[in-house]
Image (cartoon, rainbow, N blue to C red; front, side, top):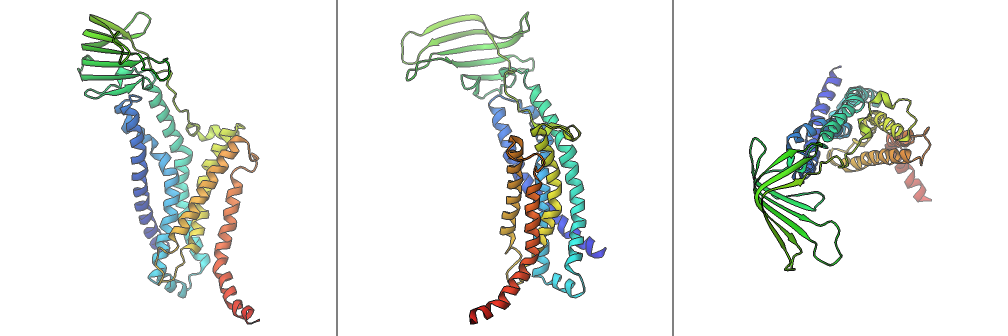
Length: 370
């Protein structure tokens, strides 16, 4: 029990550090994507924090197992470099006992990963869908940020307002629209509207209009002197809503219980993926034991890069099998279990590698003497 607490403390502290670093990098990359969407007027800035919170389990689903694998590599590698593992083995700790200790830690990680993969992630993805779905009824001017030019309507409209009051009134407005259909290699017809103030109003049929006051409208083609200039006291413009915006409907948002017994290939591939993420933890934990054996002269990071590549290949193969299962390229009965079978064989060979190399080194001089 003392050895288990010692190994667990060293491994889990390292795992938390590795997971925190990878999580910050991953969430920063994803947050940048959401910022781009907010800047383009596709979502409001108020939901950015909530989106990142609900996407957190999706990041942890893979980060936790991979961080656990790297933590074992780093912890056991340090024990070999500092000769602590040699002392433990001299005191009677066998490879079998080390495997049991490692599987004990893997069971803890499996439990938390199962909670994340089977429950928290689908729950978070459903909340993300609701947040993105709530943006469908917003208009372009609901996502407008004062003091900044924003490209809206698939790049056909550029809008600017100097300020927005608490009542929603816009001040000093600039709108420039491009004609959708135009002759190639010719300038597109543009309509530029300038107004001192503006406000959105709801019509009788529920349609929303932007009512501009005290401004000028210019329409024509750049380089052609037939511009039409209209000065107005009040000018109304229909605001299209964003209901036609494509919102990603994630299969990852389906509750786990709804996936069980579902014959749909997408649902089946998602079910296999969630189970595979949990099942890969004891495999990579056992695989890390022989891979972490290093000579004290070599250093603890000698086998870290090959181990990371092997773990990366494992995840990529699972992802590829998931896509193949979804497309029907592999039998539904096989699923992702074939990938686990391959890495079971790799793990067994890894434990026999040192023994095979020792046997080869003993027999090689005899073979060369012939």
